[in-house]
Amino acid sequence: MSWMQNLCETYEACAGAIGVSGSDRQDKILLPVGHMLLKTKVLSH
Image 1 (cartoon, rainbow, N blue to C red):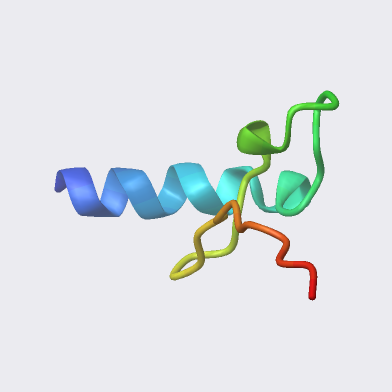
Image 2: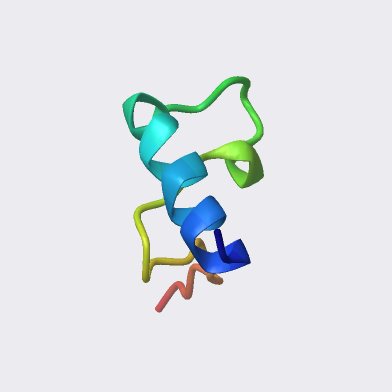
């Protein structure tokens, strides 16, 4: 089995945790494939 297949199976096994934060730290959220979490600056006018 290839490493990519192992990666896909691992991700599918964790599907119930997608979008769920285990703590208050948002960098620990499992994101859907093809998504990333970015920090942005808030601009005031």
